Length: 197
Image (cartoon, rainbow, N blue to C red; front, side):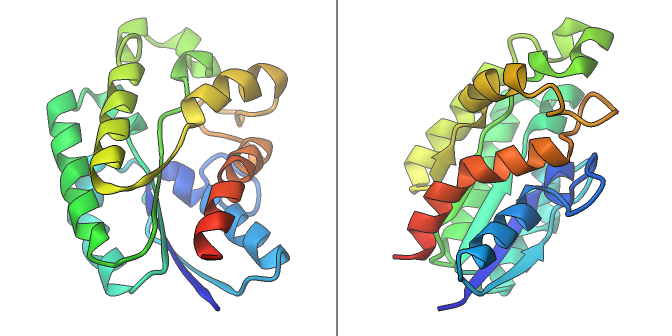
């Protein structure tokens, strides 16, 4: 059984910060192939994307691709750029409703703890302080409401990042090769269980 995997999201789907191998979707697909699963990847991620960009520019193409697996990682740019929480949750709800039409399992990743990123020391704390948790709560609520499978990157990042001095790339914001590899490893057990059903 082949896996038609469609990834939606922002620069972390594209792999900004990596020196090779793309972002977490490419690494996840590679791991699934290494386990003997034929995987085709359509990566619709776009650097700088916010939730509205996914809704207007990626979802229609994702549905048209007739996927058997969908992943979504979005929200960091919304936090940095001040998207109102209610707008974020409403758009995520619309995205979930549209993607449910595919019948594919939907895996959503919440937001890493941005306070642990080196760039956090260089920007006003108000850009992220007190905003990550409400956005992650919104992601969890929409995931529950629509049967999306949630990967808790936020909790994992509090463990991974202090023990991974090279989790972030040189820009102090995007993951490095090592960071993306750890991200994919975190998602792998859940994704494997979903595609092998």
